[in-house]
Length: 197
Image (cartoon, rainbow, N blue to C red; front, top):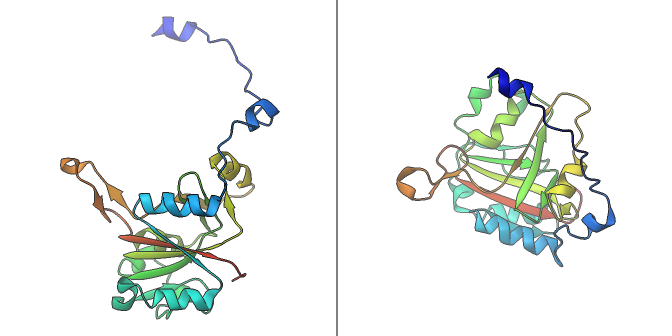
C-alpha cells in the first residue's frame, strides 16, 4: 500500500473546452425540440408541444392516469385540478399517495431527453419521485443541444436541490426485462410550453 501511495501521477492540464477545435465537435441537432421528443419517447416518456397552460389542461384531460387520479398536486398556477395544497404539507412522506403531480422543469436536453428540475427545499421536492405519475412543464424555448450546454447553465452558488430527470422510473436488473415504474413515477409527460407560465 505504501508503494502505491509513494507513486505520483504527473499533473495534466484540463483541456480548454471553449477552444474552437473542440466546440465544433459538440453534438448539435437541426431540430433540438424534435430530438428531445424522440429521446424522451425512447426512454418511456411522452412529449407534447403546446401553446399555453390552457392547452396543457386540455391535454391532461386526455391522459387516463390523470382522469383516474384521486389526489392531484400542481405547482403550476391554473394548471390541473389540484386538490392537494402543497403549503399544508410539512412531512415529505405525506406525498406518498399522490396520484398525479404537475411540476415545473427549468430546461430540457435534446441529447438525452432529460429535464433539469430544482426545488427551493422543503417536502415538495419529493413530489418528483413519490408521485405515481408526473407531468413537467418546460418553456419550449429552453431546449439545449447537449449535456455540455446543460452543465454550463447550472449554478451552485447556494445550497439547494437539483437533478436531471429523464422518463419514468425504470429498471432492467430483474430477469433482464424492463420494468417501468419500479421505484418512482410510473409515467412522465413533458409539456414544452410556448407561452410563459
